[in-house]
Image (cartoon, rainbow, N blue to C red; front, side, top):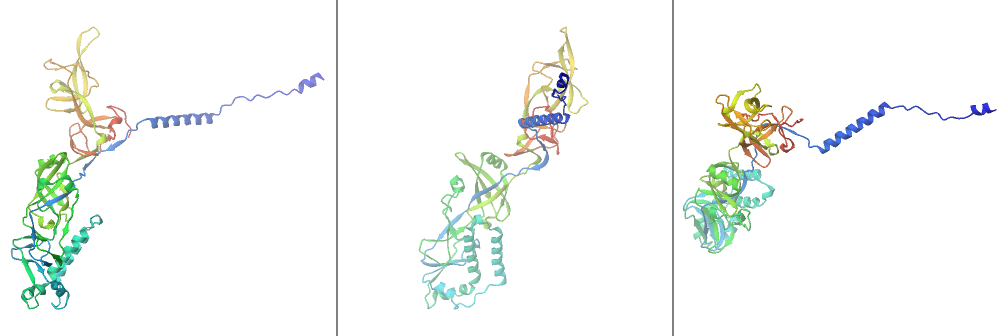
Length: 466
């Protein structure tokens, strides 16, 4: 019985430990990926930039105030004024410009059939069509006020072209039995006709201020046909000279450039015409202004007070790089006479440095130094293998040179070889985002080189990855 009892005793089976290789590999890979992600997030990735030939787009667009030799003509008669000269047209001394109708019956007569049919010739119609096409082409919703100027200009054009019968009958109307009392008013000198005033007719170029250019309180008064005028009222304006000027506001840096240029080309954005202008700079406090002087093109803009222009200056073309890639680095200056020989590596020269052996004896050691720039007297070398106080030996004369002088170069970090290699640059022009640098210079850059986009993210000889 005892034997049977012992055989019925249950003993728990212990399974042997089995290592799951697949789970271990998965866990290791997961940990590795997590570590890589953390390192990448905490690191500052190095981004490359391909150098290409380009130019800078400089903002040379300005809105300036146009100043001319202007004379306001006032009427001595009372009545309804009617114009017979087209705006911006040049009239000679004695030409009919306008009439003053004291009775107001001339307007009624013009609208009636008494004067016969007033039809436009094909040439006249083509002139009107040309004005309409030009306006539609240059129209901008931001300058809707131009619609009213165009309206008055078109009215002046049609008045000049259509009322030939009335012009032929003015003598009869002036002295006839009907007593219309029409006063003929002729030009007292030659000049260009403008049918508007704005109070800036006597403004001198050096009197222009920042507030004036911002058009504060600017108001243009249009002189309208068939309006009632009193003695002393303004009826039109004469522009008497082809010499005129445009005043623009500029930055101090831009003022210096324009002053040095003396003459620049100016493009009128409305017509796309280009003219040469002289430059003169003046300042009021911290504000700088440039007076652009012209000897032509006045007739195309004699009705405009504020004009949009582009100042065309010399465009610098070279290697275009972002400003973030530009860095400064210090280098030792070594006289050229102390170069022993050129190395097999391009840009690497051999020098003799004074050293001390273990027993204190003075010996010389050949060292290879990379040249980053040079002038007529010195080489610019890095401080990797040199220290202040080291002596270099002239192999021919035995003269010593103690390392002490340093200078700073402006450049970028080239990454073509997989590490940050400083290259000097010569900046031709620079704005807020990019710089144009000279291409194919000694120790410099070439087109399609790769440089470090953010110079602060690396140091000299740091490993980089594109």
